[in-house]
Amino acid sequence: MVTAASLLGLALTSGCALTSNGPGQGSGPADSGPLKGATVNVASKSFTEQLLLCEITAQRLESQAANVKRTCGMSGSNAVRAALTGGSVDMYWEYTGTGWLALKQQGSTTDPQAVYEKVRDLDKAKNNVVWLPPAAANNTYALAMRTRTAKKLNVSTLSDYAELAAKDPASARFCGASEFFGRDDGWSGLKKAYGFSLPKSDVAELAEGPIYNAVAKGNPCSLGEVFATDGRISALGLTVLKDDKKYFTPYNLSLNVRGATLRKHPGIQTAMAPVARLLTTSVMQKLNARIDVDGKRPEEVAHQWLSANKLN
Image 1 (tube, rainbow, N blue to C red):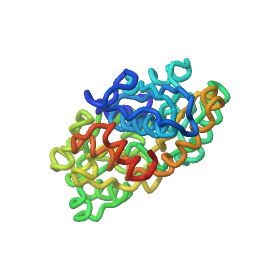
Image 2 (tube, rainbow, N blue to C red):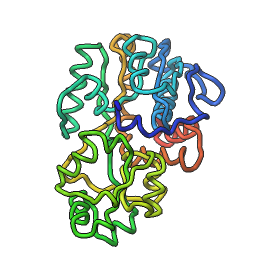
Image 3 (tube, rainbow, N blue to C red):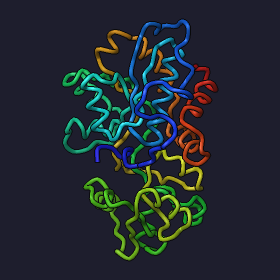
């Protein structure tokens, strides 16, 4: 795995695809603006959040008069990163935790700014890839419970959960995906960091997608592994427990741009700065839910959000 986010597996058959502009993919470049004359290729990975970010970026740049080709929906972090460093695409949104792993950094750190600065400096020096200032949105691993269950059991942090696991394992039943159980920075590291254990009978391995519904139903678990910006968290009435010991590596969003592209069109950074400032974890949850829960297309959600924030 290269990123926690890439495991969401929520690729859509509608919305962005590996094509250039087409019907429903934005209104095209404005007649005039600071990026008039610029032609750029915006890419993304294939799951919901990435398809949405691809469309937000494309429409925002088009509003500044850029001519934008979309290569949304590429298969996996390795593919889109290779396209960026190889020059076939100009930008995509990446996660700082993914960059930490892709640049082969040893160990882990829980300081979001330190992770960002390290990957920013290394990628610029090694690959001439510019990591623009990160958004607050952090699509890291998280553990979630039904909100009413969390309130009933008085559990709001992972330390609270560790106490619950010690005194009432049956109420602390956990669901996770195979990769989370296999990673050093997954289940085993979490138990060590928070000092708890659970009987094997109270731990279930599920595919990632069904975990959300399993937690919402309380069967076969009362708590499960999720990704922090997933729209199903709020839609299913779940609560993310606070990682009070800061165990999980941060996965903040940053628009990665080829250095050559940014030198040629520095207005890209100016245009995208207000977008990054508005993208919080809560905002991404809500926007993702509009696609995964409400059935809206990424193009539509992007347009409405940009319009609401006067960015298009």
